[in-house]
Length: 155
Image (tube, rainbow, N blue to C red; front, side, top):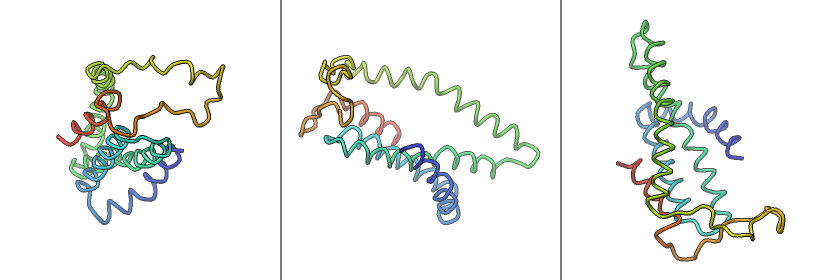
């Protein structure tokens, strides 16, 4: 579902936002959607909230194409390939340490992903509607890495 919504966001909404807000503000809006998505994952306590956060995540997918457009508009016509190549190289280079940093953030907040228990095992119970039970009140721990990551995007 998020993939289909990302396609819609990047084809329909991105062009409208680029025309109405401009390149820089569209990038900032995409980062804002990403912060909202991470906070929603962090504070969400119901399964429907996770699906709703997925729709916000789809809207945050406009960030990379908006940055590409910003780079393209600011580069000279004979430097387009170099600028886009550098931009894509930076993205690909940062994916490796970014994944490790995100794993370290989960480690830092003592999140053990193997503690889900046998209830969510596909041998016993169908996985449809299965969701890690979240407390009604936010507890700093399991979901705090998402909130912390949202704060990192903000800074």
